[in-house]
Image (tube, rainbow, N blue to C red; front, side, top):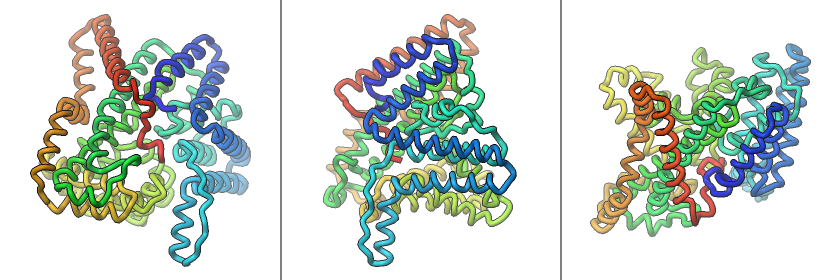
Length: 475
């Protein structure tokens, strides 16, 4: 099940909210969330519910053991076993074929990978549980003694399958008892509607153009098609993918944060207008913030951080960041691509960027970020190389260029809107209304009308579309 579906919008979510608010008992409210979260997770593949519950049970039990023996060798053994267990599960389901292929290539063997299907959201909930257990080991938090409460934290449907990655410490108090109120609920609805609009309208429109010039899972781009493209067509496809992935993923994060707010949770931001960045380091402080903080706090700093072997530490972090995104060399190359520029910025480039005019620094960031997305997009290395060559061939084709112009003009309104929404315009307008109106009723009426309009537009887009997957579902 996905958020951007009529089933979720008009059956699942209303029913969940109705049952949740039908009781004031925090314990029963948590059980409502557990039941609905497991139903949400198991809608397509119920078999993976058992894996989620069993792995959660293992981590929960180990965390109590670690908490009991904190400061002893048994705690260290416990945390090591937990981390190895979770990473082994992730490797088994996500990287089995990739690992076997590399072994066969190196040794000339012909081993066959088990070929397990990838459990939905395993990359995200694995980081939920690992960060929780490590925090218990460090003494930052106490182990959760109530398994249903822990299961709710791991399985909460708003953030289970595509993030944000939620730290237990950030929601610990809200697991025990939340203070739901009308203000939080209305803010949650607004945030959800904005995220839905970003996905269903902007990301999906951009996806249509991306599919035309870069192919997609249903109709991959062929070498013959690419040969007929002009350089302009290739660039348009790539820029549209930069728009698509931002609005797809940030839209999902907005919906997740909004849903959490409806139920009394206050999740931290996952995106902060990354395309306005003036350096690659700044971009990654604004993009997928929850993932970056995980690698910073649980990999980079324990390795030594800025104190020793800085560039080796950065290399390891960005290698793992690429690996986390998928079992393919292109994701590793993508991670190392950003490592190169972050290392250069740390060595000398950032000092120059800080002195340069803001628009020059901004152009620099975009010139690095946007071409990087082509590495992310193509898992086929030969197609990746061919597409990069096409981008920088500067070949022209009057017919193709005219078709590009027709495509862009057809979607001009939405594309201009996308460019505007890449900047903090919405928050500026909201703050202006807050200051100028001075009338709560006027503001509330405006917000309600805005939400209804967004929902109407999104539903109109969803009618007739049976499935609207998010890009990060596959990670």
